[in-house]
Length: 277
Image (cartoon, rainbow, N blue to C red; front, side):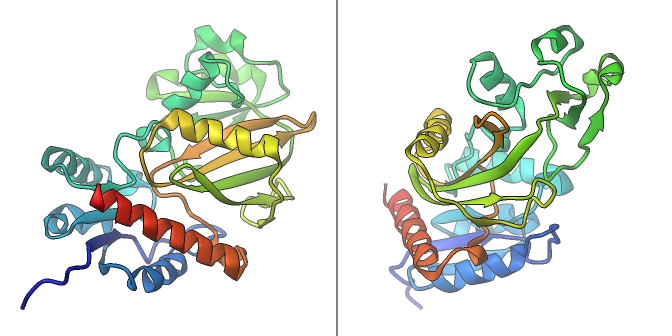
């Protein structure tokens, strides 16, 4: 049987992964139902991606869950894809969460608007004084291993295990900006800091757009889907919380039909262009 002239896409997802406040499987069922109009599409679990990807024109990594749960298999997939020149969407050289949390240290050192972050006792003096601090693994994800500590506990933390420390920010709300390539598609915010995934539509200002876009530019990915997470301080400043460039959840069920359709169209065009390049 002759092959279809349409691009062949391997869509990597864990439909059964359970995430607090998010429905990973539902989002990918929706996205793949729409992407099938443009691509010959097959879904697979992240553990199967390395063995299947050679039969496809591109591998799209979506809601595959934290790679901590299958680190060895992910590293094998990554090494094989890089060695064979496989087109992976997003590209595998991202500088954000894809590579761990080192970027928080780099951006702190560069004086960028990010929650101040250090990873060794000698640098604790660079952090602002705060009634409490947050300690989390440099290779963490999905708040795994995150804990709140007092100032007195800072010097005794196991930094040699790859720990990051930040001041606990008393912020007004969190906001997420969703990009396809370098184009901002929409934004959502969590009005209640205690309910991270109870999101509402957010009206983007020119300053917000410039803030979020600056981190997309810094990451230098030629294409892909990224989410810029930030918090609004009591003083009104936006600070980067996370730059998710591996498999950001998109909360597409919380946007209107027009926004959702526009996102799917942008993603489709982006994947097509990446394959054609």
